[in-house]
Every structure is written in structure tokens, then in C-alpha cells.
Image (cartoon, chains in turn yellow, red):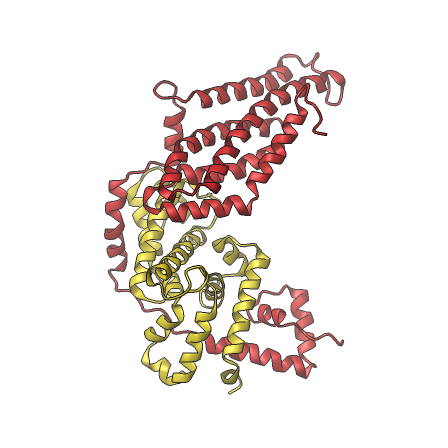
Length: 189
Length: 262
């Protein structure tokens, strides 16, 4: 019988490790997809998912039973991904460490993109897309990816990123504006 | 209609985030305005271009592997639920913190006085709004005010230390963890009392404060830098230090014999 997420979480909060394992089996694949959108490669995405589960385990007590489990987990995973991107930036020293907002997703996205896509969009288009993605701040990229790719509503994204609705919208607006500028010559083609 | 549709509304429309009235307005305008039709087409074309490739599908064994990665950490650091820890924490006897015992005692007395007073002396207890009723309620509130004000003062010191400390996150959180746990337990008792006495604003602040203190109490050494950053962001977003100052000042002002601040 399929036990609902809130009931599983309630058991996990009581110290039932098997219940926590059920959550891991149920949501890891989704969290991997979320993490990959944000960090841009498989290894980092796996690390983010691992960190997210450990953090979720520590925060089980803080989970409000009325909240949606997947939204709660998404918020944790996104925060872990943001921390990961920031940490990676410090480690790589590839950019100005004072600017915590940007990450190398663009370069990674271009490198990871399958050959079919490259053929479809063309090398120049890919480069421009990569450049546009790189120009997004971490929050812009997170909000945009969660809306555009994961299909979360603006309210859900606000919950996940701990932003007010207006701030969430502005992150998405700025992301789209940057995309429009970067891809202007392709959009009309 | 001369005003064109702004880009923001075109984006919200693309994502289906406009309410019915706004959607009708936008669609109605787009039906006849060539300028906005071009802008809308451009937004949609850009967003379609941005559709990135789906993320790689992890192997079928991904969930098992993920569990294998995290299970050792869970086993190495068993963490009973907060409820279980709180129950253990509140159990009378070994290591029971005096502060929580005191808070619980005060709260129990307040709540008991509230209900016993009502049940035991229905003929004496003055109806709400009369002088006698007001005096009883004021007495209970004064006790709660004094206790909560002290609680807020101590919480404020913890928050200030968290915000201003320059030591590494692991050191800062380690030094505040026990204090935060004490304050969480005491704060919950005060919150129940505030609820019983209808002090909605105090209860709300206690609840917001509890979330932050809970994060500190449950923080772990492994991810201390990130957790300290989260805690500081939460304190900042909720303007907690400032709110604590304001409410503490108000509670002090309500104490008998308090002198005006000006």
C-alpha cells in the first residue's frame, strides 16, 4: 500500500530509518533532476542530492505537517545547490569571489549538451545560450529553471527559495530579459 | 487603449501565471495591437529556444546508491526527532534545565489561574470589561510580560552573537547550540501561555524566534558555514533583532513603575 508522504515523514521524525529510506527512494530522482539543472553536471548533482538528504534528515523536526514534502525537499536541494555553486566558485577562483551570484553553469551546460542539440541549435546558438546562462545570477537561474524547466508555480518557487512572490517574479523577469538580449538574433529566425 | 502590454505580463502570460482578469486584458490587447504581438512572439520564441536538453537519467540503481551514500552518516549520527528530544529534555530529573522548569512553572501557574479562576468563581469573576476582570487579567499579563521580556533579552543576545561573530561558523554555532535549545524549550512554554492569554503579537514573535533558534539548536558541525549563513539570512529577512528590541521595550513599558522613555 502506498503510504502518503506526510505519514512517511511523521514516521521518519520518530526515528524510523526505514521510513526515511522510503523518502530517499521516492524523491531522489526528482531531486537529481532539480540539482542537475542548477549545477550543470552529474557528479555535482549527485553531491547536492546527498547533501540535501543529510540536511533534510537533520531538519525533519522543522518540517511542518501541512507543507508539501516535495516542495520542502526542493527548497533544501536548491539551497544545497546554491551553496555548492558558491563553494565551487571559491574553489575554482575562476571569477571574482566577491560576486557570489554567478556560477559556471553556462560552460557546463554547453559541455554537457548532447550532440543532437548542438546540431539542432548550431554551435553559435549554443555558445550564446551558454553565455546567457552564465550571465544569470544564482537566484535568477534557480528561479528561472524551476519555473521554465521544472514547471513550479511562482508561489512554489518563492517557497523553495524563501523569496517573496514579487522577488521571485523579478528574478524570472530579469532572467528572461537577459535571455532575450542574448538570443535576440536567434529568436526571430 | 494606448498603453502597451509590459514584458513582465507577457512572461507571466506565457507561464500561465496571470489571473483570469489580467489574462483577459492581455489577450484582448494582443488581439489587435501589432506592436505587442511582435513583443509577445519574441518572448515566446526566446523561451522556446531556452528549452534545454533534459538532464541525464541516472542509472536504475541511483536510489539504492544514494541510500548507500547517506546511510553511514545517519547511522554515525543518530538523531532522534525533536519531539523525542524535547520530551527527554522536559523529563523531570536528570539534567533538567532550571530555566525551562521555571518557565513551565510560571506558564502553568498563569494558565491554571486563568482557568481555575473562571471555573471556580463564576459568581465572583467579573465579566470581561469590568474593573475586577480587568485587574485579574492585567495581573496575569504582567507576570507573562516580565518573563517574556527576559526571554526576549536573552534571545536577542544569542541572535546578536550569531550575527556579529567573526569566528568560523562551526565555532559560532557550537557555542550557541545549547543556549538556543534552552531558549526553544522555554519559548514554547511562553508561547502556549501567550496563546492562552490572547497575546497574538507576542505569540507570533515567539514562533518566528523559535524557527531560528531551532535551526541553531539542530545545526551540525559538518555544514556549519552554510547553516550559519542560512540562520543569519533568516534573522535578517524577519528583522528579528529589531522586532525583539521593539517588543522588549513595549513589554518593559507595560511593567508597573516603568518610566517613560522620554
